[in-house]
Length: 307
Image (cartoon, helix red, strand yellow):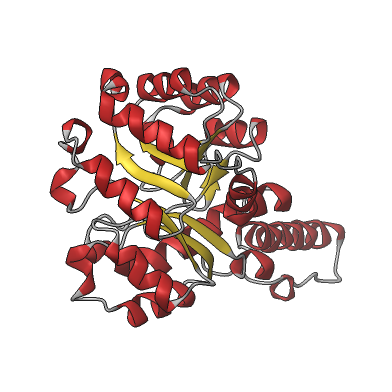
């Protein structure tokens, strides 16, 4: 993760002194004053505004898995999330008990998502494990969620029976799918359910051009930017990503991805880093990526299918 970089404040225009002497001295003095003013303005433009520094964030990609509970109890985890200035947090965990612990502690903050994994070791095996389905069905019958995921699936595995049943369960319960996978997997899921809503984890780790092409094909596809440092450097948004955000202002959101216990300690730092580069965007676009897009995505929920 890139650590937010500090820009020292530029010296103010008071440092310029215009000498009231002959024309040559006046010209040199004015040049110095203009240069100093330009430096001061550059400093003001580069620094985030007070509003940007206080920008609320909806973190759409957090895990609170079994190996985090002992080192970071729920009360402390929630305190850390609030300290980072997070408005809401979509949490999925291995196992789901972690999500339920956080939700019980802070139902105003935590947005529960149901991960198929009972332990993190199932990341590579779950899609061929039929026992995942009764586990999901039991959790769905006893708890409330906004999504199924985050889950990992690539290519033709998206057409395996377990994955097909996950897509059907999402349709049945009116849930979002939080999919970590490639473009092929995304296409196959939409092939199964053209009305599906998908949050594409990490924007597929795809290039901005590939992300744009995929978003153009699917109006119900959103992308989180978790564990990606390429959208911005030193508080400046990369040109390709600026173009992508501008074309799709309502489709991107932030995420930290606390995939291991130590990642939790990066949550405040990540939020500060994100606020810094969001300040480099127009305010409506920055607010969308920070929190409005995630809220709108959840509000676009399809109604469940009546039993």
